Each structure stands twice: as structure tokens, then as C-alpha cells.
Image (cartoon, rainbow, N blue to C red; front, side, top):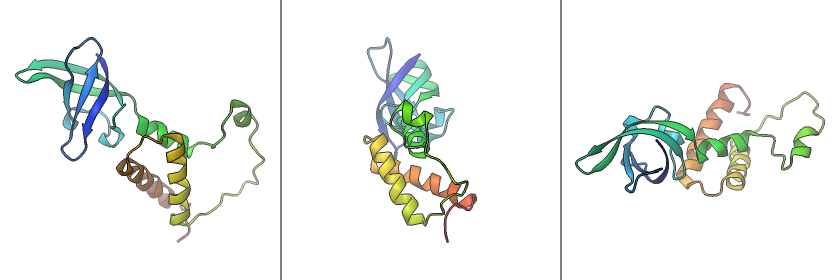
Length: 144
């Protein structure tokens, strides 16, 4: 059954999913996810298996369909073009990559995340920035 996360408590590790065809929201614990819990946010769409428990429907497992966090990461790491015509005709590239400071990367990435998905929480923006910074450091894309 497919549903959308309507409430998520990251510190306690649970969410409630409004599932298609059910009158009551389904309780979902992060231990029942088959994807990285950092992709969870309000608005995440999941496929769930559930059972009726003593306190209402409870998810037995959940797989990711779409995530606003993942969408924001893709948008932030994309070309930044705003129209299909721009994407089809990117500006010429000299073959060299800019090396940024960590502060420059964080600033540019924050701006892109807020533009692409302004409904991300501050905690989600920080988590995405940290993950991207780790990748950039691992590839030597950052100065210092």
C-alpha cells in the first residue's frame, strides 16, 4: 500500500503515514525502513506492508518511492539550469573544475537546497550539506 509521511519525529525515530484507502494513519518506526532514514521527511512517499495492532495500523516494512530530501539533493547537485532549453545548451566548459573552500561549498549548497526545496527543515539541510561535503572531500574537490 502506498502512502505519504504526514508526521515524522527524527529524535524518537517514528513517523505516521497517511496510506491510500485507510481512515487511520499507519505508525512507522525507522527500524522498519528498507532505505536510509536520512531520506525520511514529511512528504516522503513510501510503499508499506502493515498489520492492525492494538493501537491501530502499524507498518511491518517500508520502501522508498520518493523523498523531498533526495529530490533536494539531486536539484542541488544538478546543473542549476532552470529550463529544458538551458539544460540542452549548457555553457562551454574549459575541462577544469573549480576547487572550493568548505565554506564556499556550504554556502552555495545551502542556497541551492533552499531554492530547490524550501520546505526542508534546518536539520535536513545540515544533513544533506554534511553528506555532500564528505563526498567532495573524498574526491579532493575542496581546498584545504
